[in-house]
Image (cartoon, rainbow, N blue to C red):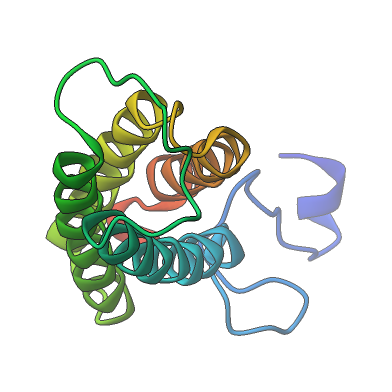
Length: 149
């Protein structure tokens, strides 16, 4: 028996799933909220960017050489990825565990697609890759069954 236990003070375990500091949020809840919000924002931006690429907008580099396909092909890929990301974000807010894994999967696919889309819009693709990395971290590190959004 420890000295603290003999005084009547309960021992506190190293990790508890109870809310801390009087807030109603579980451990890592901020990361999950951040991941859900950023997943929806990146999804909407991908939908808009995909439509712009399909329409051959002037915002993309015209003489870009792609690994495969052309700007129109990558526009469709980015459009579908963005739509799936928005749906995954809605599922995250509904506290669906499958939506968390869907979010991880589509953030990973978007990261790869943006890497291959680099010739069209380099700085934008790098920024989206960075945000996708944070989304994956938030969903994997803090999205356990006990602390789902």
